[in-house]
Image (cartoon, rainbow, N blue to C red; front, side):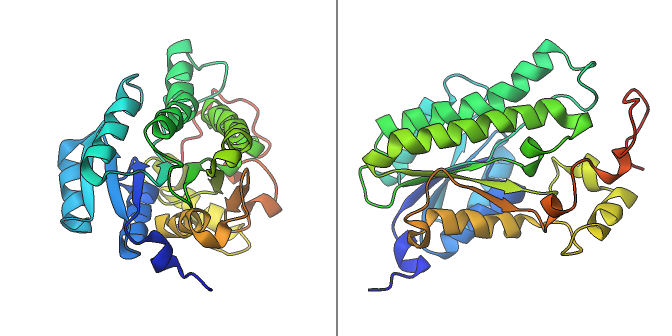
Length: 274
């Protein structure tokens, strides 16, 4: 029997962090369109309220949580259980970059904030979700949002990409541990996507220049990444776990550093795009 995407998602529950903007919002929309319930996790109440309303009453419930808060995983899992009575999917999309500059300039506080949000928080949420019922139903899955930068040289955001490299290792480790429990764990590694968080990397002329060197000749949109996440959560990917799916318009085919930093070694210079 062939199971289509809509049938697979109908009646299931997804936790999505950072779900009010960009990739998280597009993923929430994609899953709701296919019949899934979504717990919209974010920090700002007004953005949560607007997102839940847009997704439709009965389809989504909001949860205010800051992923740097040690209590956030418990708050999130409890909210999903109370609202929907089950947990089928976790999408770790919330991220942070507390420093833009060379590694010689990054502070301990900024580095720890970035790593805590991007590596520890996703792991803690998966731990808590498993304890709270993830894996009890067939087809349970986790998708972590990483970056192709974890396998490139990205001089101005090296702390961020280091945290995502840690997330990649955690994804594979979780896939190995949780596979026998019926839970698949994969990641999506986006290239440069037009999101608010990545604005410093694509706004102005820089976005046009970056798009010009891509084989597909355009930057990513949140829905491009949401489509990959939806696939990895679906039954179509039922024999995939521990995979890193690159969705980058072909960026990894043409070399490493951002175009404006190729051959630039003095990172104390002002290289912010205008």
